[in-house]
Image (tube, rainbow, N blue to C red; front, side, top):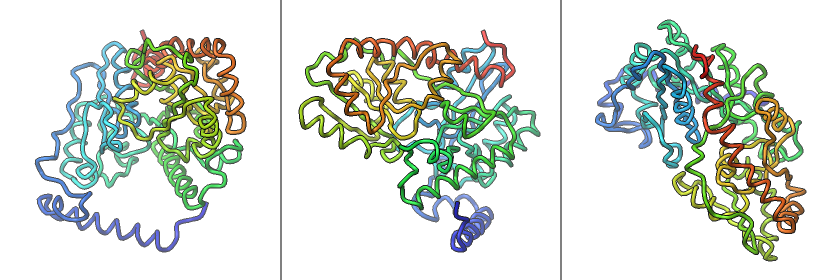
Length: 404
């Protein structure tokens, strides 16, 4: 990994000086100065978060990627005497995920008054906190230094845990050696170096904080030895559909990558587009669709293509399985083995790589009944592994509660 350049070090120092100067100015001034993205009205500053009225009170934040902070909070509330609040800074790219407590990125990043009041409310009201993606909970109040926040919270008898989602700790250097389809091979060096630097920094935050680490997908266990798999959570009822699967002459194939480069979209589209042109399948790609629209898109599809570069399965696969769709992805044996070891169930995701996807899709068209049976296993798998009950059992010891 290339060390920071002299220019990058200078810019870092200038940002620090800027923060120190702004810290000494009244908020009525700082809220109206700087770039447009940093400005906010004082009336937009929310009140501090309110803790639940329960024996165990848990805060999860501040990322809520794919609504998982919110979903894990609901999982925690399955446990006796536990209340939980999910927090999100920013709007997650306008995807409108459900959340309990939200603060704008401008306020989170620039309002020390908000950050200090939020910190004091958390320290006085919550028994446990989970930091998501090694990210600050109190923003400007701590200059976004997570270890500083963790020390302060521990001084107020608040238990600490760390939740990791993927890119935050995934090391491109390791992954590129592991998988020939890795998105970090043959990629722009500056992009790879940026991700590597961020992952190593976040890993150092985890080292410094020295709290239990939970990861949302099993392949991250290799990036963070000693961590624990915390399954992704969805509401099966939200995704359930009565629509049949693989009944059309041309199966409808959906690909909904949140990040096409990381998901391997460019590796598979020549294949699926050729099959679309030859009328074997009907292919559709959508990007950054609001979450409320996704159930209908799955219901209208037969096959969902997840990712073909990372070797894992994520929220997209879980949602599509809950909808009874046939999911195809490139999933490492390490992931499949860990899921089976923990749950006793085989992952009902059809394996394919960019090199084999065309052959697999043609086989699906030829052997529809076989693949209908694979798709039919999806809802039961999601109900057993990803409806929140297993995640609650995983979280229970970290908040000092016996699982039911």
